[in-house]
Image (tube, rainbow, N blue to C red; front, side, top):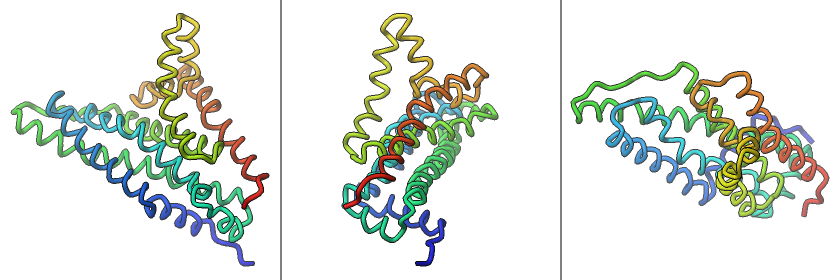
Length: 243
């Protein structure tokens, strides 16, 4: 059998993200929420480009991981995994092709947030007759994109580990709330959150203020919430009997 080129696998998996009804709805909600939140924040907070761009992260932090979960678990939800792995028996290539498109979507979403924030900043400044603040820390935008990529990767990792969309979505959505509770459990809880809460450790990355200590804490939480579940999920899929 002729080997399927990896770029074709990527194209197929990318198309699957937007072909399903849930994917289309999530994409539409993501676009609408980004525009609404940026414009709304501009009217309240004023024409500050960095603030308005970061406002889009409220919706991205929730919807991008969900989109990643649905992308990874779709084969098992629709019982098409057997067909996929028959056409491409090398499961690692299929898993890699499933992981990459949602990460690319996270980067594109960051660019889209900036494209919405720029005219919103100009319009709000004109409407309120105040000067616009265009200042953005040099590392903030790449850091913001990397933050969304990490959150999206967490959704993919838990989707791969559970192979069940509802379970993975619940884990991703409740993760922040659970760590918020833990951080209030005295000094021990605060220290645990500083090291293991991905939502907390990626903060300096998103603002472009990361130090060496911040990088170590981020790496620790990435190992726990992305690398470990992704490795266990890949091992599970590689050994699972596909029906």
